[in-house]
Image (cartoon, rainbow, N blue to C red; front, side, top):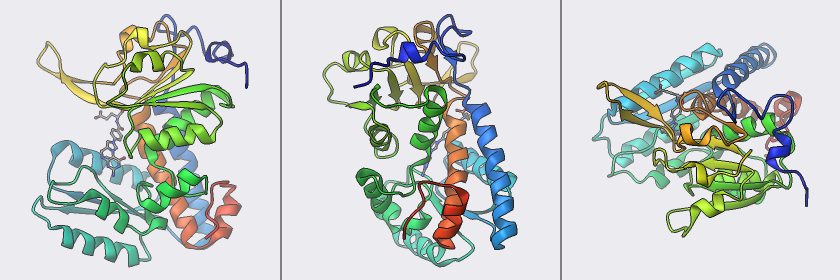
Length: 323
Ligand SMILES: Nc1nc(=O)c2c([nH]1)NC[C@@H]1CN(c3ccc(C(=O)N[C@@H](CCC(=O)O)C(=O)O)cc3)C=[N+]21
């Protein structure tokens, strides 16, 4: 067992006494910008060497305005790093069969290396059937059974974008995570479960809280690393947090303000928690930008896998696929 605690690691050069009384801010926006730049450089080198431009297909069913904005941002950022983007905006009434048919075509298309189907889908479509229809090596969300199973068993695979982004932030802030206590609040397939497995693979002692957990605050208080992904805005209060802990806030909810406008808040009550945490991600500007940057990373990785192992090994990606 390591004796290291978050408050000791937080006393390093960058953490500890930050601008919020206690916590220093983890700047996801700056980190994501850096990651995008590296991805753009690698996309260019990959194209020069292999003559292949990575391509990402994004499929949106229905016309939820928030999803439309978000999907357009993905397309913009895909172009900005030199990749190709293929958008498929389908009507709300699209049948499951025709969506599956589209995925089949995208699976076979050699110009497309990554496929993402925006969630949630309309109620008449089974999301499991759809995510599992995506070819595992094009599943850039990492949500299908094959990639989920690879993560579960510790095999190399494609890791879901949001947990991958959180892990990158944590490792850059804290370095080696071995022996730290980590609590993940929320047990979704999209974030909570893969996040807990990644932390376990890093050597953390991991607790997962979910809807039936009797006293989540008590479990959260044991954490050197607290990752919150529940969709309940400002759920986590100061008495949930061990002083000096590193807090990663995945939640993002738009709430009305007194002035009649709206603003984004996370699952953590930032004003209460920031004074006692060691480090904390803001909302917006924390995990969100990392999710999109990691989607681009995963698309490049999928393009590398499409031409065989060699390009992955050359890139120094330790998480390349052996098949
Ligand atoms: N198959 C699938 N994969 C996903 O990864 C997925 C999805 N479906 N459906 C929707 C959610 C939501 N999501 C976000 C990603 C980035 C920001 C983001 O960049 N947020 C900015 C603020 C954006 C704003 O101002 O609205 C920030 O936090 O700074 C937000 C939300 C990925 N999702």
